[in-house]
Length: 246
Ligand code: NAP
Image (spheres, rainbow, N blue to C red):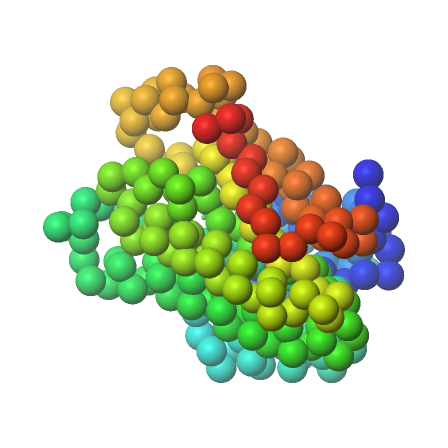
């Protein structure tokens, strides 16, 4: 649908789940892709193997987005290897659900550190780089939970609502520099992230979705690629929901 030849894309959490499909969609559209992961070496190796036909355009890197120094080192490496990049997809995210009164302090901070602070770090270094080129596309993967905030997800919902606010503020700061910053906000997408849902909860969620089905990663990737395209030049600070009508 879109041609990304000559463009370089960073996808965090890009070796499994939604991120993997986003990374593969960019590869098949001609982009060079740097896909990052954190601990799942097996999934990263399989992703590399599955995409061996794109070996020249694919670079898999280990990166913890919640560590400031690691993020700083990562962008120095990208700069020296590629001389910059055009597109950043902040996809890495985690969930650690429990009702607030029972929530461990560490579960609150872990979710905030990855889903919100990590994206602040990634955006901070990315924007410095993109300003030099006066071009860039940043797509942050939020969640419809930023609007619905279901019980048991205070940390996750707050992190994703914060991410929408970060996106809107940053989009205004860089609007005259050729850089757009948007959110794609998925509903329930069939990946490992929601595999552990109890059957009863799964049924209850399905009943609430007007389309009566979970979405798939391809449906999210299609929206990411649109916002990453040159054609989406007048779209910034927006939240594109992919939720089957939730
Ligand atoms: P997933 O299958 O659990 O994958 C999460 C990815 O994030 C993995 O690649 C993981 O790396 C990486 N990651 C975790 N912590 C990290 C850290 N500290 N630094 C860097 N990378 C880290 O999740 P998903 O379902 O594909 O979700 C992707 C995004 O969509 C998330 O932001 C999620 O909140 C959002 N989302 C998902 C749904 C859904 O229904 N699935 C709905 C709404 C929003 P490893 O592979 O090394 O573990």
